[in-house]
Image (cartoon, rainbow, N blue to C red; front, top):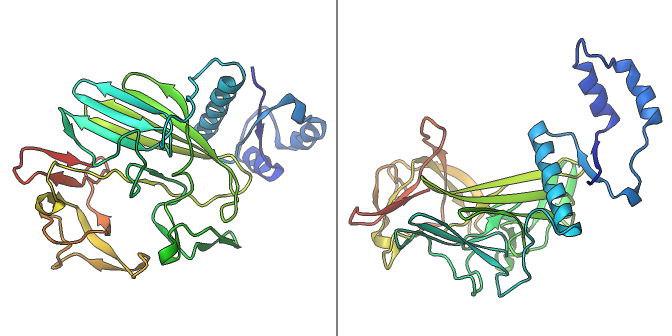
Length: 324
């Protein structure tokens, strides 16, 4: 059984004790308790988790670390990922009724999703390389950072350029990492990886993605836990390339419940926000894409009562479509 050490700074402990009233442990005992505290030694191989986060995040971090340790040390617990078997590493097929999906080890990417025999994604086969970001997880930032430079908490950080022709860094740091299998059932699985501190992103994150086939389709959930000691900038996205079976996207019918688009420069960096009213980019009412080239970020989303916003791509016949 691993030793779990929940670590918090003195300032954090003092603030939490000060907020407690009527508790059996008064705040003035903290000093004496810290004086006699024996922190775990390295040879005890403790699982150290910071407590400066919500309780559910602490629990998720502990479970993730315990799963990983038990799989590595004892061979019990979640199944281990097999070694790489091709350009995208190992792959796993999920199935539920008329639905099936394929997830690959490289980047935790979604390669295939089929419903009633029809492909929902313009994806990739598990034995071929990923092109264009298809199905990839974009962590810890989606889209672009101009020049790879940014400031955070007073620090100036420089990330390596990955979109060299436009002098940007793009789509995060975990696209080309082999993620490890954590759990798997017939219709679901979860993969995880650790993003270690590195040039331009000196932060420590545990990241997990879960894929689940259910009665309403495929659900993807991404969980990230900051297991380092500093606050970290974080964003997430994914690139599912949708298809409704047309040869070109021109004839597909698109609905986007957005009131604005982000205007970008020739490097793809946002420079402003424009209303879609009266422009070719107003897809609040379903219509064909036509010859419009869409590499466009929309915002000002109109949401359903459950707070979700739904983008719809439909076949021109109206007989089939995809909701995201």
